[in-house]
Length: 336
Length: 270
Image 1 (cartoon, each protein chain N blue to C red):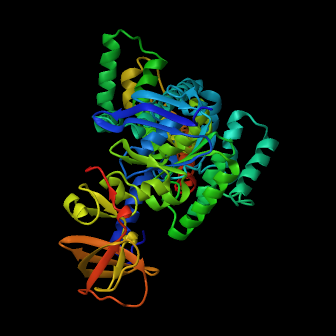
Image 2: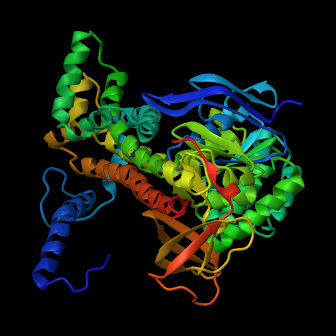
């Protein structure tokens, strides 16, 4: 079975800018695939290449085995949820959702029924007669989703779908999107700069930087085993240990990532159970974050942050402490 | 925006004076359409009559030729402006390229230039290319400034139309013409209507460019100019002036209301 989307050495240059630079990737059918990266890293251009708004400067794109370059957006069985939703202000919500079907020449009764189905799927039944301007941001986003899904696309593209929503709504939509994807079985490809979003929703994540994919894998994979300083730093937060320090404390002579939540913080002299490497240092600052507390320490001149469950106020700023970690949590990386 | 303090008395007087200065002559034209004195305009009119309306209708067939020519020219010039102005606005609102501002300025220039310059340059151009004067030479002359009006109206609306809306339409399966019909036209339609009404009104009463590009033909404004020199049946000119006011003023009023409405529906897209 061919991949849902396949990029073979695809580049897209704008003048001297290599927005997408020699990218190869395969997205399997039914996957929830995230393209994660900072702004300007090429992830949105990749999405636009799949949608057909951009054509590759070089390389080859296939969508379900069919050559995509040269095909205009309206000949691709792919639909997009736009970042600004791009709803048509002169149409009602119902007309917006039925637009794709109207263009295809589906009869009024049938397309109204399908639009209604699609709207109830995103829990907006009863909003058909409203104008987009009468909806909240979250509701507009659902309309955009319904408008795309009503066409039963083989691939659904989402461009920063949750970027404009507030935190509570975003968390709710994350769950709903994931449930919807499971229920429909459609391949979802979404672009985000929010690593939390990518990790929580996607089956697989590609991390973009400077037009290239720097790492690709399951969320767990990219989080636990970042291959470069960029990934370690961009996906979650991490302690980046210099090669000499890492070698002296249980690792190898390479830049090494150590996630803050893998570090135990104990008072000096207190025994640490299990097979841990311990170092001593002192506390620079303590940040209370609710369920967890972030403790920044200085160990032999290297700053190491640890995130521990919030207990009672055992430590104070300036206190000497012991840090302990299991050496398998030290992840050696490329220098980049 | 409302100013907090009420305007001072001198300012009010100045404002009223300004308005009177602008509109009193119009009232006089209206008044003298009904005067009984046909050789000179004396104030107050010695008597009022509806006679000149029947004179225009029954005794002066020379009016209808120029009137028809003016309507024809204004319609054609507006149609040309509608097509070219919309295309230019569509291109310049989306594209980004070096010299874009200069090109935009070039589009607007014909309305900023004195009509006499446009007139002379067109006339010599027609001479050089040995184009004989015809309805079309007038139409071309008028189209130069009609395009500006349509362009400006359309440009303002195109800027509000987000590019992703067009992409969304294509994404949902619509090709170019379908996208134009279902997404672009409904959103710029009222601006185009407003622009074309203004263009029609501009063309309908244009004199200067017309004098240079008409040759022996007489449009309505030129007919009126000639009529003023003649001593007899002067109020006929005033009656025709009333017709011109009606023909040009009503579209402008309609244009005003149409664009105002457009702001309510179009500006809330995001």
